[in-house]
Image 1: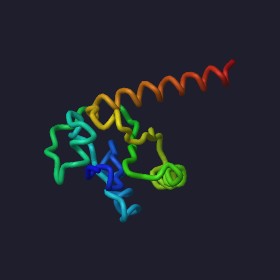
Image 2: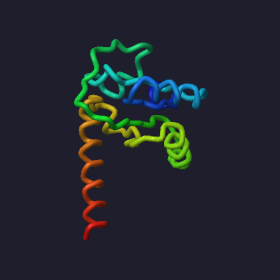
Image 3: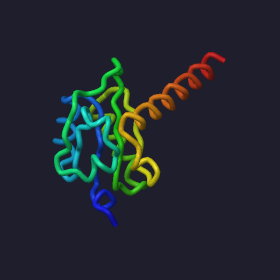
Image 4: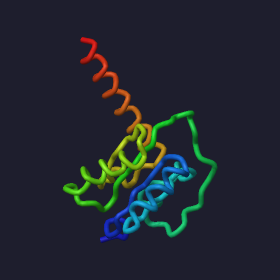
Length: 129
């Protein structure tokens, strides 16, 4: 079993204030600020003691991404409620999987944003329809 499977971590791609709130709120969990780590894979981020950051890739996006690693599926729902309460903003949640561990963070964020936009559009159409 590799180290990323043993450690509970939240990979957060959001602003610095949100990162600090979650670090203070979840003291028993590693909260990793992934801004500037977009060119690394999830596995590289989770296995690195202190990954070298680059200038964050920004697209004017205001969404925050929260990616869970090493959590029991049964506990994630409650943690999501807590994070929503603490941060009070639009969030996109995901978990690490065997296949996405080798994805670059930028690729995962793009995929998550695409899925989010699809479901937002579908919800609007359902409400308007």
